[in-house]
Length: 481
Ligand code: SAM
Image 1 (cartoon, protein in one colour):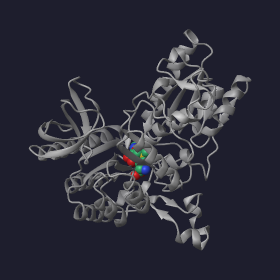
Image 2 (cartoon, rainbow, N blue to C red):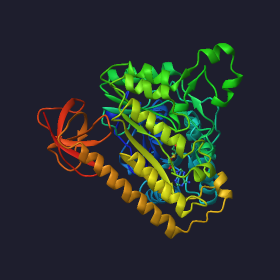
Image 3 (tube, rainbow, N blue to C red):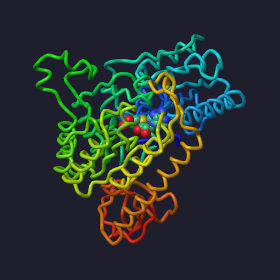
Image 4 (cartoon, rainbow, N blue to C red):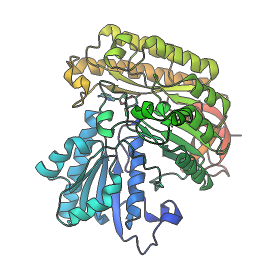
């Protein structure tokens, strides 16, 4: 799922995670400030970074002028995300120049590998550059830069999953949390930079996942989202890259744990713990996963299933590993087993060679599926991807027009789904205060629909039954029964 930018994720030390791992307050003498951009994986990674540095005496601050170190956790997925990060780096440097000259500036995540030389040597915008698999090295890198050396580690790993790291929950509501289960991606879709920035796919030890989910529940959390670029491809056979599974021993192969097995175990942590997962790749989502979803009430009836295009021809150019018919069959299977399941998608318009006919197929697929929600983008070329060697031949105006048509259709479908819910009553997990009114809470249904309602005597973390009385295309409004 794509949160195209946004939010600085920061907290003060009073909100930080596992009390057992927190050094005494006297030891938390240095301050870090972290901003995260891009996908949920990046937000989750920032929590790992905060945990690694907490052990080194760093607490987080929301005041950049007081930070000893500022990090931006970067996204490379689209050109726009990169531009945003560059602007933030320029802003940090202005703070450093005018108010906080001793502050170190670090770049984390997906932009690290590609822009290391540019940021560090050419433009001198940053002091530290760290790729997504090298966060354990941060304490050494900080020392290196303090000793006047260049601090850089962008080495990708076949094993690193940060399984033993207990993330510091940043800026959260204390109710919903991300739990990372896989890293990297082997899919090599032609448009996508992820395999180059995040490396090969590997899965995290299920024991550590279950422990994290149990700990979260005991700490009052009521919803976890299992995270990975391609969660349905989860495969634990004792550790190591997914591509090396065929080299594993017979015993390892026989005892392997697939995503459906993991999902089943996580759902059993506690019936009051809601379970979500993201992202599913259509080529890897099996019937076994849908059946496990149907079996457990606490697995939310919502699947994010990026499609990218409705045209089989274009899906082949994108190297997605499924065609329009396969995708429709998967949707039909979901609807047959879980008739009320909400489905959302990612869509790209204006990919290399997309014809008007291809675009119409995208619109007609949307009419068939009637997605509850969509994240829609116009194609932007990413360096080093296979598509960068193709002709990016759809002009900007056409890309934009097709995107507008896709968005308009999605908004109509989203509104339809919301209107269908009027008059019905749904269970809602209260996640926090409504942004628009102090008298209202915000929560979500199993279908991931946002619901706003008067607070009454309820509290954050409660499950309440809400009768829906009004809606927009994005939000339901109702009354607690
Ligand atoms: N792993 C998921 C998948 O491919 O099914 C999500 C990957 S990515 C983090 C999120 C979304 O960004 C993709 O699903 C795609 O719609 C969009 N995206 C990726 N590369 C893009 C590009 N070069 N131009 C425009 N959108 C892109």
